[in-house]
Image 1 (cartoon, helix red, strand yellow):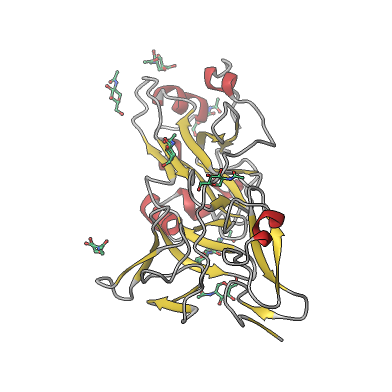
Image 2 (image 1 turned 120 degrees about the vertical axis):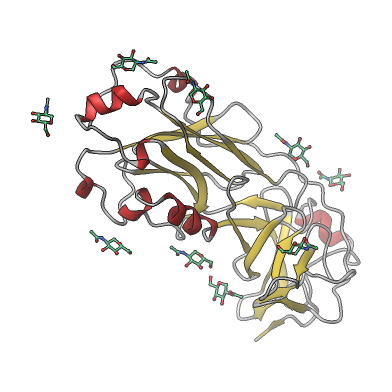
Length: 309
Ligand SMILES: *[C@@H]1O[C@H](CO)[C@@H](O)[C@H](O)[C@H]1NC(C)=O
Ligand SMILES: *[C@@H]1O[C@H](CO)[C@@H](O)[C@H](O)[C@H]1NC(C)=O
Ligand SMILES: *[C@@H]1O[C@H](CO)[C@@H](O)[C@H](O)[C@H]1NC(C)=O
Ligand SMILES: *[C@@H]1O[C@H](CO)[C@@H](O)[C@H](O)[C@H]1NC(C)=O
Ligand SMILES: *[C@@H]1O[C@H](CO)[C@@H](O)[C@H](O)[C@H]1NC(C)=O
Ligand SMILES: *[C@@H]1O[C@H](CO)[C@@H](O)[C@H](O)[C@H]1NC(C)=O
Ligand SMILES: *[C@@H]1O[C@H](CO)[C@@H](O)[C@H](O)[C@H]1NC(C)=O
Ligand SMILES: *[C@@H]1O[C@H](CO)[C@@H](O)[C@H](O)[C@H]1NC(C)=O
Ligand SMILES: *[C@@H]1O[C@H](CO)[C@@H](O)[C@H](O)[C@H]1NC(C)=O
């Protein structure tokens, strides 16, 4: 590991943060569950309150199915991300990462100039969704990844460096060598991620490493949010950048949702708009409510007769 002679200016605005407040969501209610409580798009099953056809989804839960791709792909309108899995029981939807929209990725010339690295953003403001169960991952041998949490000036991040010897980068271990990660608090509606090469002078890096040539991960680095269980670092992630990008494009980010910004008490007052149907109950979310089947029942609480023994 090499040491940095000068403190990094970028570290000065690295402020650790664990909790924050997210914006209030505005969701209008459209109470009536459709006749068919489930549809599909390609391999994806789409349970209500998600839906494709007009009148078959709650506001904010519309899915566009692109059938000109085979198999068809589903996109969550409110976010534009591709949906790969919807679980009503877990209150989670998994959407696919995309480069450069949700993944900050750089492969820059190390010619000494301090250029700002790329920024990626996930913005769920004014949608029923929020980030849930994700971690922030940074890869590279020369990478400072930072993430802005929410709309306030709260940052966290981590540093990924490498030992000279390749064997030090071990599969499955994301602990600062070739890969670092930070847990991310649930409930955020907006994050912005950044990645920068720490050392920008190629000759200097060669000098420090005592190498005549520097490898790809000294120029290329990434910073992204990912499902806690959907990314595992492999040493080969650093070698072949195209292969790595393909892997990341297949990784997912987890979102959870509320169906309305009302409290359970408010929601129950108007049974015409109350989203929780038979054998289900209201569950308080961070900014509103969602529904869950009663104990002993399983299925879809948003559909009449959706929860069954
Ligand atoms: C919920 O959202 C609506 C707009 O859709 C807004 O008028 C209302 O004030 C919000 N309610 C709460 C409790 O935030
Ligand atoms: C979604 O993921 C769950 C496990 O998390 C799995 O049981 C289910 O089959 C998946 N559904 C689809 C359509 O991939
Ligand atoms: C569907 O996907 C194709 C191929 O990626 C694209 O050209 C087309 O614009 C998409 N259609 C819609 C409605 O988004
Ligand atoms: C260094 O490379 C960047 C592109 O990565 C370029 O914009 C910049 O002008 C270069 N600076 C010098 C001093 O050559
Ligand atoms: C890069 O580092 C080398 C070796 O330390 C030094 O001689 C050179 O002046 C540096 N170049 C820039 C642009 O800082
Ligand atoms: C996030 O999205 C909201 C609603 O679309 C928009 O008003 C806001 O400007 C966006 N924030 C940023 C930082 O782009
Ligand atoms: C790391 O994982 C890759 C693919 O999963 C495998 O090909 C490689 O042999 C593994 N390397 C080590 C040192 O375990
Ligand atoms: C640099 O590498 C060369 C050749 O691999 C070796 O002979 C030399 O001792 C190394 N220098 C340092 C300071 O480690
Ligand atoms: C991540 O999830 C996607 C979609 O469900 C799946 O294809 C991929 O194999 C998963 N990757 C890992 C490392 O779990």
